[in-house]
Length: 209
Image 1 (tube, helix red, strand yellow):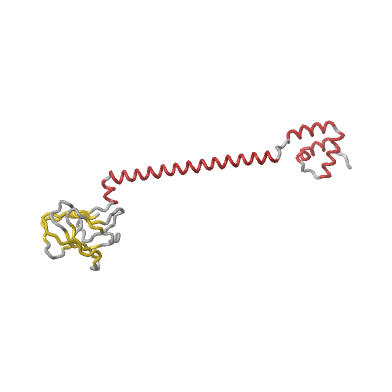
Image 2: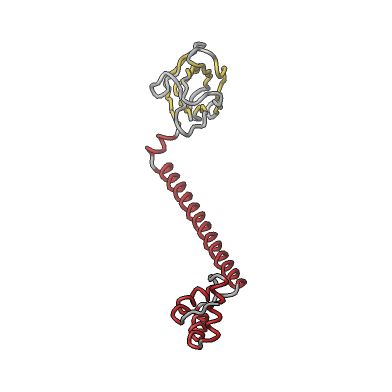
């Protein structure tokens, strides 16, 4: 087998230590190390520098790193969820406070129409009801109970009926005493309805909420 010089041996030692030489070349380097104390010392020094942890230790370290990454990711997700909850609660509370304390905002989102009638005597005739100057009742606000209420201070009962714009009766004749209310759940949102009433009184106050 061909011998090699110390210079060539030193050039090959890093590859020999890493175990990536061909079998034939590795044998040539081994033979040289058996006969050259100087290169053998260089080899021992280099081998110590290239010491790798055993495979089980590498796997153990990888598992530890992976476990730590998962733990950090879990903590990050929890913190994100907590922040999201706090932000949502803050937005809801802020919105509620604005809604309840700022009159313009409350009126914009909430249906609450009032009709005041004085000295009204309809007899047996159905009289159309104008709601805040409008010919039709229309629930177009975000928040509405769809309910008609006769205020308790009203002087008399009110009989009413509601029809659509084609004249079809949607809610048939009902009578409400002062302080009573009637559900108008049959009415659709953003739809015009005609309200007609019969009543006899000096003062009648109706609310549509």
